[in-house]
Length: 458
Image (cartoon, rainbow, N blue to C red; front, side, top):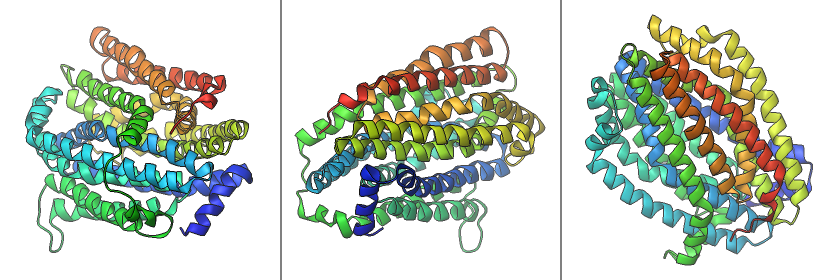
């Protein structure tokens, strides 16, 4: 996207037709989410061709990897808030400065984390409670994935910078490159297609790492062009006051994601304690989450659009327009997701069969889908409005809502239903639905309260 088109989109966000602004922001993000879904889907599909144990390990290690990139996601949320407000206020120099400091801070944090995970990958796998049957596979996955932490950090933060400026095509290009390399690499490196070596299950992790490194290079190239070319003219030293502002906005998002991903790992751990069928339950959760990601795509795209729409309008001094945009985007998300959830509920077994042919895993995956579809509209409501709150800088509000839903509702109920009441995996699915309904309703109440309109970010 050229600088001219980016400026046109920013003007549309704060002064133009709200539907056009939402569409112009949302469709490239939705395309990115679709690509991201196919990457995750392919990882699980190829793992399933190798074996149920590999499929279970991929799902478990994916949750763990999300835990490691939490700081990047948190920094990206703070970055969107600070950069979008600066652009909305007509201060491009401040936007570039905040963006560069975010990248430098992310590079520093990811380097430390990558080295730590590489050195202690076996200990980490043991600590989080992987079933013994898949510990060796998981440790190998994690060691390779540790090399993808740095490029993933830089991709996540740089994509947030581009989105905050209304420059939504650059992240789409990067994600397309990432997806093509990752998907092709899964098949080529796992099965040794053509000139590529046959690496077995390790090929899944290697493909992701190589794709991440290439995507990072593409984004860094974009920073020397168009509106971001001033990056090279500013200092490469970290500014402590700016980093302090970033941390102030980002730390609640980091704590939120730590709590959420740690909770997801605990849920895997609870299912792993089943006396019978633990691997089946873990594989079903892995498959169910991947299929459910089809529904997550529009809300995730609208979440990111809402953060920019709310952030730029607040920066332009238009809080009422910001609120209207937030509710409009949320309404679209709920309507779209309701239709998709109904389709998946009706054809649950058909969707489940796309990822597994194992009868037990197929049946449990279908059960997961039918139960969880009841909560999808509430999930969409909360997900989109949380993007609006985060774009306004109200990261603490979203933090408390999501932590409460996970740790005070989902996990206690899951433990009781699965372990105490003996409902098996079905108990975990019921707990998930209960927490998502509460989360969506409370998030809507937080947005309606309007406190987010008074928050100042640097």
